Image 1 (cartoon, rainbow, N blue to C red):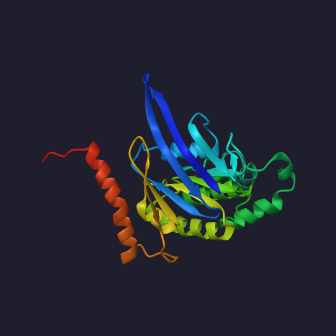
Image 2 (image 1 turned 90 degrees about the horizontal axis):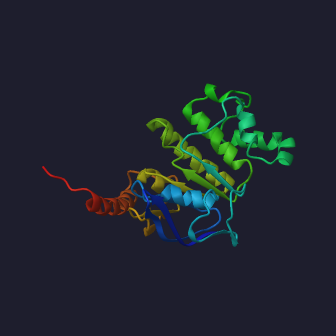
Amino acid sequence: MLEIRNVNKSFWIDSKEVQILKDISLKVAPGEFVSLVGMSGCGKTTLLRLIVGLDEEYDGGIFLGGEKIKGPSRKRGIVFQEPRLFPWLSVERNVSLALGDQQRKHASGTVQKHLELVGLKGFERVSPKQLSGGMAQRAAFARALVAAPDVLLLDEPLGALDALTRIHMQRELERIWQEEKTTMVMVTHDIDEAIQLSDRVVVMSSRPGEIKEIIPIALPRPRDNKSHDFLVIKNQILAHFQSQAKQYFSWEI
């Protein structure tokens, strides 16, 4: 169980304290896929940074398996919008970097298994610059999963891909999640993507980021984004965005 308890986070900007997250509380069950959606600047990525342990200056608590998170750990993997592969290392070496020194000595089978999982069998010794954008992101997923994390955090993992590759990678991500049964928490601006992949969608308000609604997605998989039930959920989420936008924008014709 991943549990976020009453988390508040502020930054100092131009000598002024600005609250980014306000009273965030959320439980994510083992093996669950949860997406965070909200307008830019609402603190979604900040929350991921707190979960992964990159920032410990906040109020409240974040717990994994009942233990408070303190600093980065291989129990919590992360995939960013860009693959962030080392260009001077092969795909295989990039993936093995996620393992500890002792694990790496006996890692060839584990690395091979995860490259096969993401569809990169045969590309072990290829340089990252020889990969397409989608293939490079697959390698990033393999690197994040190879250490068998309890939770995988996804920060707009498909945001840099073209439309067709993104749709294909959504299906691949869903397949990987179903096979690995890893708990996943994803930040995305794509509402369709959130509904397509998630067990629940967490809708956050504009700054300071608060949880406005948690929407369960009780649709059969694979999901049809043109179905009535899918569109009802999409409109429910969009209503939150439209309400928030009115607070910040006024239009004159």
